[in-house]
Image 1 (cartoon, rainbow, N blue to C red):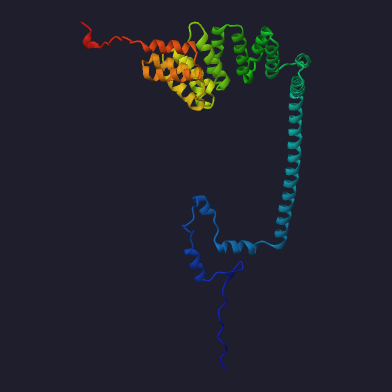
Image 2 (spheres, one colour; image 1 turned 45 degrees about the vertical axis):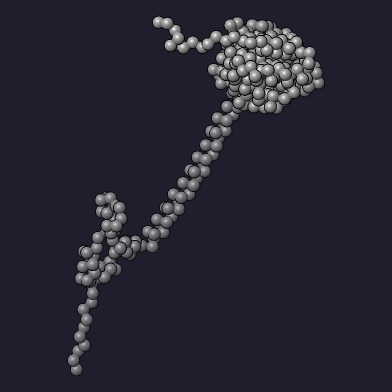
Length: 342
């Protein structure tokens, strides 16, 4: 009886089948080129067989030791994070307390100023102007707003010097400089110092004050100071009319300033707009007739004069205007370059 043929056993190295076929696969293995890896990463990259061999060579006790070590480091990291959070919170609290102590006086002053303003407004609504001044005088440190309120009360009471001083004090605060200078300009207008008032209003324009009341006051001052600046007054009034087209008083004011600036055509247009809204204004009708006379539009002027006479038959100005345009008016011919001798 023949003995059975023995099959040669495969050599196993470190629990890994080291057959020639497997070795050939290991030789042909290389990192995938589709990944963006540096040269160092490619060198350190392990093959799947290398990873499996590492797992087999690591004992259970070593695995437990590594896990305990990892757990201890996690606990220490957790404690360190918790301690650092506590330290950060304490440091922030210390900085916050320092900041509050540094601004405590400022906060107390601001609260006192707010309370004083509220009480002053109530007292002013009740009609106690002197009481408003008494309330404001109790404030230890004044701000720009309180100086403006105090100046307005002095202005209403007629104490112009004190109102001007309050406006000057308010200009020390940048946020209240515009209100302080406007108050100073109003006081100077009341004192008839129009040139100084115009300087303050010019400064307000540089500071960017676009309020309608400022433009109205500037137009008033520009047209009445000596010498007058009609062009600036017309510009200020035009901006007011553009912002508030329903304000017919400002349109009438612009028409009068245009008449002073010999712009009778623009004045007639403004008078026409006013009459389209209020056709029964006899004075505006008379002024438009005078503007037509200056433009030598005699028929239009006569029609306006007759319209005024229908409402006021004995108006002396209208009768005089009709008498002036009823006579034959001899006009000189217009001269041009061809009619002028060299």
